[in-house]
Image 1 (spheres, rainbow, N blue to C red):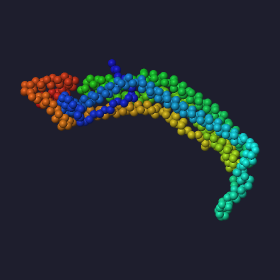
Image 2: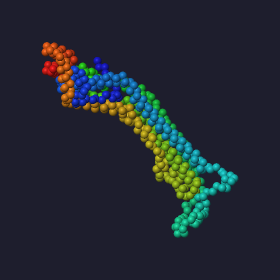
Image 3: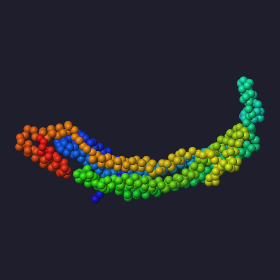
Length: 444
């Protein structure tokens, strides 16, 4: 019965196998003898076995971790949708507030408070004075400059606008900004409805995502877990690991990322479509707010200066005075060339790309790491292993110590005892047993 199951987002412990038998391979009598007798191969085998044990334990731990980790992925995807919807909502509400402020400003400009008393007597429009008496400004500056410079600086002042035209343009501009505000509420409602649908979709699909994870999320490494246990049971296969393990790993490298994407898509896909629908009207709302602010600023400018140039600038923003430079979206007419900032909207939708979801990206990298380390493991099983002189000397010394002070008969008896012990220790590894036996027979 296969009992090992896999949650792919926990990193497998790093494989660390040296091509030189290290000190840990000769830390007692039998490890030293086996290392030298097999020219380091037993050391390599032990290290490989330790690595497989660590991998096997990790797979077992992963099973117990599956539900929590799957919930983390699902919650991460859910939170990204909620945050994206919230970002779009904030942009939408800010645009609505900007429209309201622009409408209030337009109304105030077109209906300035009537000043009475001393304030009315002291209020002077310097631009208007200059327009009535063009000589005022240049003459005032002339004494401060040399005559030649003063004469060269004399220019005609900007032409004043017709007061009636200014009044009509301001009235029309206010009406236009108020219309943008009114229609903005409708556009906002469309976006808000899509945002709500996105949040509702997440709640529905979280249940389905959990079902996917529990039904098929544990499958990809079930075979691998059993294969690792089998390899530990038969260490003689350590240098030629089962092709089934290789197949299971390759299957995992393909199916687990696909599974992660499927879980993420289950949570985000429908919600992302709804937020795409919310993005359109929100972009328009941002554009409306930008246009309303521009019109309000132009109104303020022409109301202050009363100049023809500023009046023309305002008129260029009003759709019925420049019909060849407007666009119509959802019944709203906007001048071309003015748009709101959209970086936050792009970022909000960009984070819903499944491969960019933080935990999915992390776990895909973990799966890739498992395969990479297994490939490294395979290479290291084929690496030539050597032993240094100190290890050889240590093994010889320990065997000699076992025989020291004994007669020839006692040495032979001790040798047989060691050989019998070797048979028990290396019963599952006949090749190592054969070499250890030969070493004991020829040394000491």
